[in-house]
Every structure is written in C-alpha cells, then in structure tokens.
Length: 279
Image (cartoon, rainbow, N blue to C red; front, side):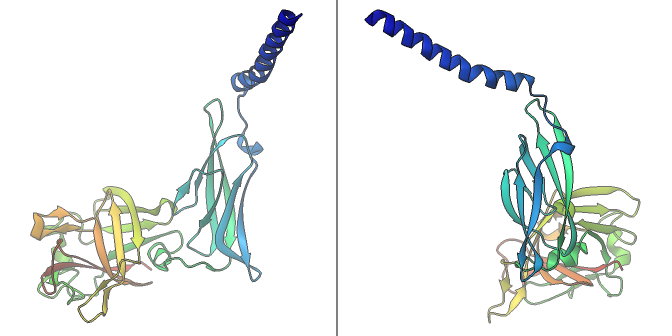
C-alpha cells in the first residue's frame, strides 16, 4: 500500500506539472498577437485645479511589451508617469511587441491646459511646441567669432559676418538653417544646397555658469548628439566639432550660444554663435 501511495503521488505531481505547463506553451505557440485596434492603453493627464496638467499617466493593460514615445523622451514601462513640455494637443506614440514578434502602433492625443509641473521653457522657445527653424541672426554685424570667456556675450574680437561663414563652414552660411523638433528632440541642420545632417539635442538648465562675482553668465547648457549647430566647430582645437554649448540667450526670438575649450578661465578666448528664429 505504501508503495502504491508513493507511486500515486508521483503520478499526480507529474500531472500537475504538465497541466500547468502545457497551456502556457500552447498559448505562446498559438498566440499570434493582437491588433492595434485591440490595444487597451491610456494616457491620462493629472488634473490640477480643474486643468489638465503636463504630468501624464501612461498605462498599458494589453498583453504586449510597451514602448512609449512622448516626444521628448521614451519609456518601456507598462505603467509610467511622464512630463510633457508644451501646452495644447500632444501626441504620444505607443508601440507594442506581441508574443509572436509582431509590432503594433497606436497614437494617443492628450490635451495639456497648463504646465503645472515645472519644465524648461526653452523647449517651447526652441521648438515652438512642434518644430521651429532657426537661422543666423542677419540683423547683427557679426554672427560668429570669438570674445572673452565669462566676459563677452557676443563675438567681439574676431567678428565674422554671415556673408563670410561659408569660408569657415561651406554651405552653412546664408540660406542654411537648423530645425529643432519636439518629437524625438531632433535637430536637423540643413545646408544652403539642401543637404541635411540629423541628430538630437537636450537641455540641462541646472548647469549655469557664473562669473567671479556670482552673476549668471550662462543660464544652462545645450547638448547636441550626431550633429552640431551651424558652423559648430572650435578653431582653437583644430576645428574640432562642438557638441556642448553654454546658453547665454534663448527666448522666442534669439539664441546666443558660446563655447570655450576645457580649462578656460575668464577672458580666455571663447566662441559665440548668434541665431534668430524664423517667424
């Protein structure tokens, strides 16, 4: 009897193992996935004082892996909370990965009434909420050149007018432009002949640069990846490309950037770029 009971328990355990595994294997083998229309996903603004804020709760209740693109960033979490940076209608693109490896995509639109949660205003200035074009500020006598680090706020020593930029960076003078896009935080440099170079950009407005007396000289950093701004080079370093810039001015109309080689002190040579937004 004892042997019989042990044998019976062993058979029951095997039965439980197979009954627990077979349906999973069968589902994985048979699960062809769902369609975009069958997705159960939401993007819900957090309401503050009756207004849709820029804090958005993302939730995926579907049997797919998640990838959310909310314009200025991405997340692969099933549920997450993200910050948008502009008011109005914002698109959030969801890409789901089915068990069979197929991908499905769906776009959600959320309305942001106010920026209840702080984000750098520079996102709106630079992109206009979607995308915006910037060109050399041809109202200025010089748009590029050098001056004193922590001292100047524009080209003051070597002053290069827009008409001479092509001699420094062919095709990046008159007729060239930069397009800053909110979607994907993309920067596209378009040369005068239409040739394009694309990359990405980001801000760090916490990285201010101050003068010796504590006065803020640069209010943040603009970093580019895969592309520079127009004529984005450092002549004092063998014309090496520049990918990080001090932001001296950035508003709805103007942008002034600067760069100095690492280790530079006050009044050492720094380079300056002067741009304006296209209306």
